[in-house]
Image 1 (cartoon, rainbow, N blue to C red):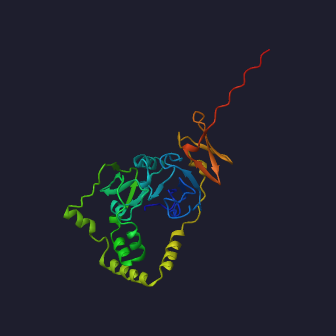
Image 2: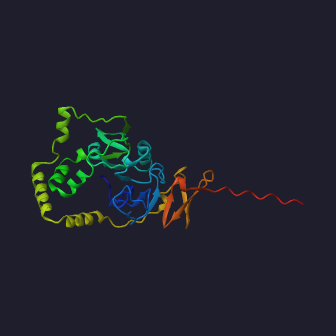
Image 3: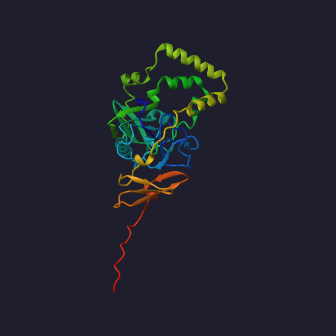
Length: 293
């Protein structure tokens, strides 16, 4: 990721494993872990918000990270429009269509592919779970399979870095052409040089010897590493998700500064909840009538 040393970075859908470089976290759900791998982590400023209506000012961030979020969205085009509105550049990651069909996550709504410089999505609908949890177990307990999958990262995972513009299109059917020999050869070609493959294979053999619990512990240690905490003046970057006006942070609420909007959002357990379905609309004070007599 091309993140500068002084860039202000937002992580949307940060969940249980926020990006180490993120300065501000954003997630829709605090207590519901159904669609993530563990309890939410809030070790830096966390805003509760919907990614379709982000509560940040235009171009508030230099970079936005969205890892395994776009496939959950009701409206991925609107989601991308919001990313472009609040940040100058960013990174989108998701499972590929092939990974989605092998591993199968029932709560995902879209198959995601990258064709050239464009994200191409089509709806998941009611496709069956053919393999159960077979490939989850292969990846976790068979280092040879895990090595194979890591050797073809863009066959299984979509990595899309953008600056200024996200190119996205929605189709009704898959764009993959799996009947073309030329296309298939490109898909399965190794992405690493022979020396790298040999070194990684040696590491895979090591994983066969080291207990799985120890490997998981080492991975967990790598995940928690992050850059030092950075002070962020939230009031300078937050905005009303309804009208995008500036807001005022008060002890118990966040108040939209636009009188025509007048929405007020709660702060619960220390987290601003800037969700449209939780907003209150305060009526303007009725001017007192002049006294008669």
